[in-house]
Amino acid sequence: MPEISRFFGIIIAMYYDDHGPAHFHVRYGRQKALFDIEKLAPLEGELSPRTLSLVNEWAGLHQQELFEDWELAKKHAPLKKIPPLE
Image 1 (cartoon, rainbow, N blue to C red):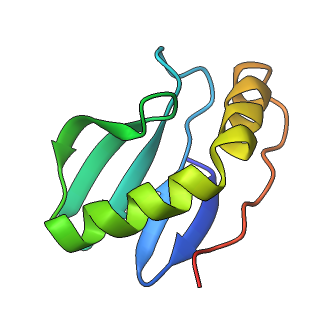
Image 2: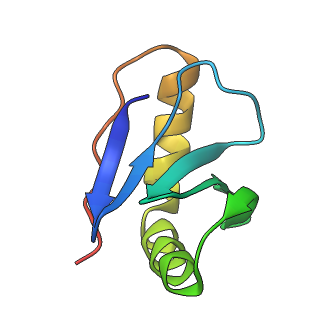
């Protein structure tokens, strides 16, 4: 699973040929979730309120880049790294 960003210990990644809707994977310690790119909300899994807040903030800043990486992943093209939240 290609990692596209990492900040504050939170790892953001996407799979090639993943099912829709457009989403990314979040891992933080033992927490895991799938996060909808369009709705900027978790699809599956559970994140602590703090982790959810950070991921929401980051995804809101980079929503267009996330959609671009989703399209690249569907084509098995190299994904672009997205800047971390600072």
